[in-house]
Amino acid sequence: PPKPPRPPNFYLIFVILHTTSTMMKIAVLAALAGSAAAFAPAQTAKATTTLAAFETELGAQAPLGFFDPLGLLDEADQARFDRLRFVEIKHGRVAQLAFLGQVVTRAGIHLPGNIDYAGHEFSSFGNGWAALDGPNAIPQEGVSQLLLFVGLLEASVMIDVPDTGNEFVGDFRNGFIDFGWDTFDEETKL
Image (cartoon, rainbow, N blue to C red; front, side, top):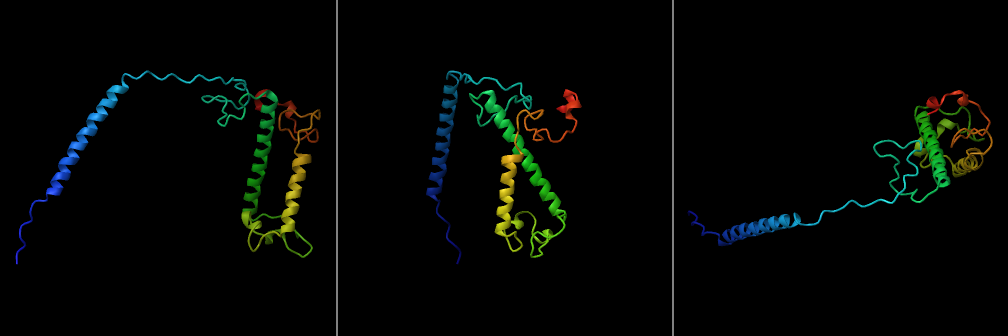
């Protein structure tokens, strides 16, 4: 049997008409809000009270100038700036050495010989994170010795000893090695 014709869906017609009138109301409100914003007072830029005390330091570059997004040096003196610069240089050098260690060991280059009296070779341990965790990891005693050695270097070797011939912040030679940097002109040193 053929299907009888469907009666018109009055609900659908109501929704379409209601939606159309709602959209028109929203358009009118948006136009009113836009015209009201035209008469709002103009915002002024917030005045800054930060002194540009470190704008001439090495590393301040255009267009940012001296960049301190966390505000670590707000109201800081030169001694605080020098301390943070020293720590930044030291941590940067440690990160460079860590990266170099990753590259060298991943290339398959390991120290020759055994790491302990049991006959385990340096190359028998995993590279990267696998050296600290996993089946081929260095034993916990070895990791502790490594951390103690790094702490010893941090506390006694990688320090800036005054009056030992250091030429710049972060010069950890402490009068021990002379690379001839004092013979370079200022532009070459930078």
